Amino acid sequence: MKRQPVPTDRLHLWLMLTLTFSTGVVDAVGFLGLDQVFTGNMTGNVVLLGMAIAGGSDLPVLRPALALLFFMVGAVIGGRVLRKAPEGWSGRTSLTFLTVAVLIGGLALFTALVDVTGDHLLGSITTSTLALAMGIQAATAKRLKVAEITTVVVTSTITGLASDSRLAGGKSPFWARRALAIALILLGALVGAAALHIDLWVGIALSAVLSAVVTLIGQLRHRKDKRAAAAAVEPESEPVTAG
Image (cartoon, rainbow, N blue to C red; front, side, top):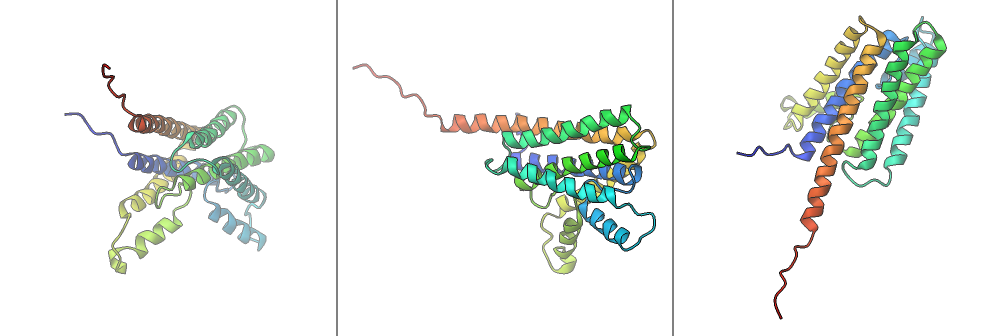
């Protein structure tokens, strides 16, 4: 019996959950390994900046501010590239996710060769570039419109899981994907923190590999769906009858 392929919308959900895990990894690397900077969760940076400006001792200002700025730049780039893209996955979706994979992969190589933790400028370049990549990723995930999955933050996901639950009188829609997103970003942070015991570049490299895999799988499915759609609308050849 021939096995039925996974529906495209279900595959997209799995791919975005993979990127959610990846965000947990890079956020752990940024916060624990690079001067308390969130590169995916911008809410954390805004809170850090507020506390630092109010006089919080030993709290960073420059790197969270740069991360916030470059995340927004990344989101602008992603939104601009995808502005005229069709609904769902497209060639431009693959392009933006590939850009994320290349940026993070380049950083993994850079941090493997150069000690960025001992140089303030290099450390700031690293966190800013990670934030740029996460901004592009977030904008692309938003455009893909996988319900309840943003890949970079789970505050709204936690709110939805609780407020729509049966305890709150709701019907618990999307409870499984919401719970998975929360669990995966937590697991990603755990893996990212553990990777720091080996070296800084390890967690970044893992995130780059995951982004590349997501891009490849998404592009292959997009091409398959495109061929299937073309075959469905192609008119059948009418038989030629003798005159």
